[in-house]
Length: 369
Image 1 (cartoon, helix red, strand yellow):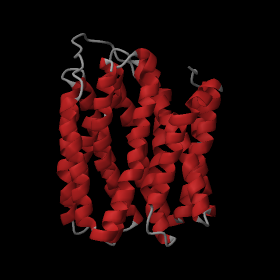
Image 2 (cartoon, rainbow, N blue to C red; image 1 turned 120 degrees about the vertical axis):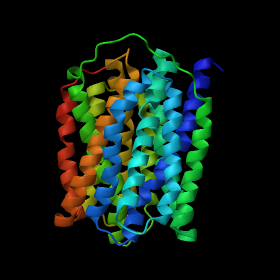
Image 3 (cartoon, helix red, strand yellow; image 1 turned 45 degrees about the vertical axis):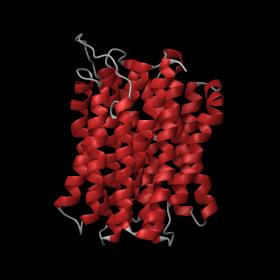
Image 4 (cartoon, rainbow, N blue to C red; image 1 turned 180 degrees about the vertical axis):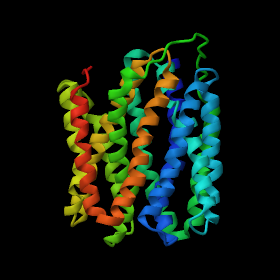
């Protein structure tokens, strides 16, 4: 096996278990609902995580250009798994749950904020974009495995074991991180201009808004419809994303970047647009698969284009991409929760789909590759 393949395998394994820890906590809104809190409370708690990510990412980007990215990942994954079991002792809304979200937000920024940059630093240029797609598909797969396993643990053993099991996965990821490739540290000062990234940043923010509204608020919405197990949504979503990179990637490449972008946006928005008409599990499954296909292509594509903008500052570039995505997640957490309190979930999801149409305009103005 080539050295680049060894390096990518190490990144894939460490990132997979890190994301298993993270993805189980996608069910945190259910725990918050279990505590008797409101959609606005869910948005505030989840938004605290995004605020911490946004504050930490610029520092993570700068550090990743001065010390080993491997070290930054280990530190971030340790914070993520270390904070997880303490949710079991949270009794309601207050400082403890918010502090835990801040710690994990910093941890997420440290680990995930530099992962794609490590892929670009340790693999051949000809395979980077595809491998980034594989990494994204692997990450997304945990969005099915984590919630599905989490739902089972909650149902059979309660929330305490749920949080401890998530922490165990994170610990495995932290230990695996010691085998990550050692990447070069740049000593040369390079100019950094944010202007050329603005169209990509805006597109990524909108993508984060649409994604955040779905993954944060669809599980509690399904609870109001009498569907207690939301793992079906996550499994179908993951299947759609894996379908893109396992089978349809070459098709998307052949039809041209602009057409692929537009098609992906329409697939992405089919779920939030269709929520007001959800009447059965079959339609939920179909819309979730389409949503996963759109997201599965758009996320790594935008990520790769972002890093290509700043080839000499990949750590900073990837941190800027993750920063933009989490800004969108924050807007979704705070805005969607408040809007849902006023207008209800179905209308709020439809508004999310309408706002997502901005992606079509933004992507149409970019240069295809």
